[in-house]
Amino acid sequence: MTDVKEMTGCSRYHLNMSTNPTTEELLRRYGGAVPRYTSYPTAVQFKGDFRPKTGDIPENAEVSIYVHIPFCRSLCSYCGCLTRVVHDDSPVNNYLAALDEEIGLLGSMTGYSLTAGHIHFGGGSPNLLSGEDIESLINLIDLNFDIRDGAEIAIEADPRQMTAEKARGYALAGVNRVSLGVQDFQRETQLAINRIQPYSQVEACVGWLGDAGIDNINFDLMYGLPCQTEDTIADNVQKAVTLNPSRISVFGYAHVPWMRPHQKILEKYSMPGPLERFRQAQVAREAFLDKGYLGIGMDHFALPGDRLAVAAGNRELRRNFQGYTTDRAKTLIGLGISSISCLPGAFMQNTTSFKVYKEKLSLGDLPVEKGTYLTPEDIMRADVIEQLMCYFTVDAADACRRHGFSEAHLAEDVAYLRQMEQDGIVELDGSVVTITESGRPFVRSVCAAFDSYFEGAQNRHARAV
Ligand code: SF4
Image (cartoon, rainbow, N blue to C red; front, side):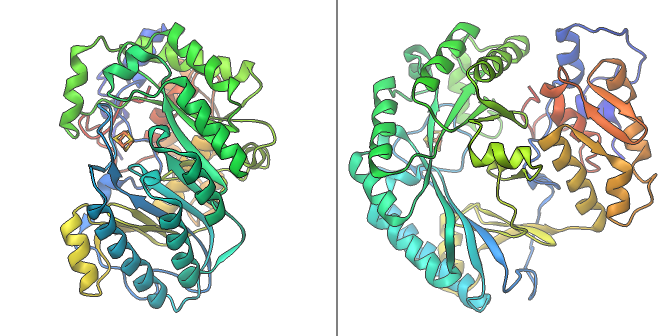
């Protein structure tokens, strides 16, 4: 079991600190680098030379499908995604040809027996693709996986690459949810991050999508970017709500220049420190709640009638690689380079190399590079972490029992949370752990106490807050 003092990098963690610590003290103790827990084990645990065996990918099941489109027209300075800047269509068309092969290979391997209930095009900027491109991908997925009636088909879109024609094309292809990368409405921040997209451009996108019949619109916003302040964040929220998106995500900028060297360019700007980041996140949260949005998990908001809000109310919320989701399928098939598949007993990730991706597919091989099989303990701990991430509470003994472990199996992990209890982050009632309202920004650090692989590696993860 990892010592919790390692997870926060704070050697004082086990000392009996004073109660009522200041926010700065809490950020020092619990705001260190921790995973985002979109999976457990996290991708850091995936190993090379992983080969799926027959039966790892189920047959005759409903699955979800993620398609990675790793291309953009320019590089945003904060970008942490796997993408490649392209100025013409030939690399994109080559990639689409390989993607078609991967879809066909997986379809034949599973005997064309899978049904797709959710499809998500992520990137990169999937809306570099035309309506016809998206339609032919969806048709090919339907041929190989049989898209069920009423399936959610979502696409991430860069507002700078949207047009009215694409909006119509996507709607005709069957897309029914669009996630717009808004990030920030302020020109000073947009200049710093190399992403100029005025409010009028986002407003036009929302109009085109609505005219095409796509009313399910998500906005992605960010805090912790250069030149952002509590006031600019409040203004961003005000501008966002005037466009009435049904869902909003507010992510903290992850400054990881050791993994993404292009982010170093941002260091010449004034960057919000931990306390300012914390306050920016709070300003956004309070403003969205004030505007009638419901808080979902740690960083999502949804209008009351939205399916995500309904799922949260019914305790059917899930968390996967796209964040919080209504998707309850046990299998997620990742297509395209770097995509991760979540199988009932394993995770597997495709290669991040375009060359290897194409070569393997041309030989009829799945382009899998690494992965890991899940132990029964992994599955039990994943359940605990997912409950904390989605609902901020878990009965650890109950989770142990449901997964065939002794009720006391996680007692030591719960005991590690005593200091957090004294600091007002969690309340402990026997085996029930409940994160307090004021402790919610530290939910990832609470989850890390149940992560038996976590080593507190500061250079592998972004800040918890
Ligand atoms: S549009 Fe998204 S994926 Fe592309 S460079 Fe910007 S942040 Fe990265």
